Length: 80
Image 1 (cartoon, rainbow, N blue to C red):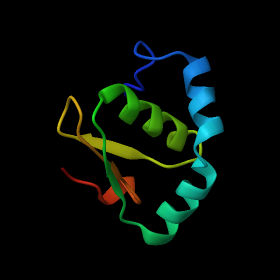
Image 2 (image 1 turned 30 degrees about the horizontal axis):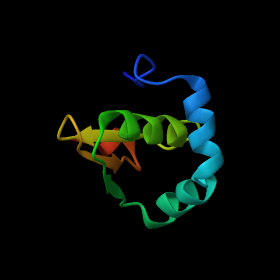
Image 3 (image 1 turned 120 degrees about the horizontal axis):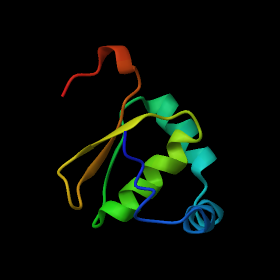
Image 4 (image 1 turned 90 degrees about the vertical axis):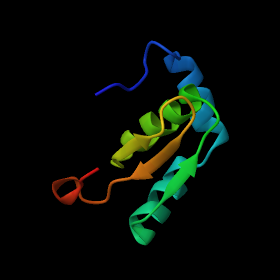
């Protein structure tokens, strides 16, 4: 597992968490069960993944170097 801790600091993550309501996003993701985002940078994508992971949301990345972050509602049934 790579949370990208070499790409950003915990201070940067806390600042992002103050700007974005990740609790609300996590709640919506659990409700919808299919969710994805496109990001222009790996750093931003990994920070979102980290913040969501802290809220019990597992994600996976498609398309390295600025790609798509996908929600994994049930890790037991997930396949790429």
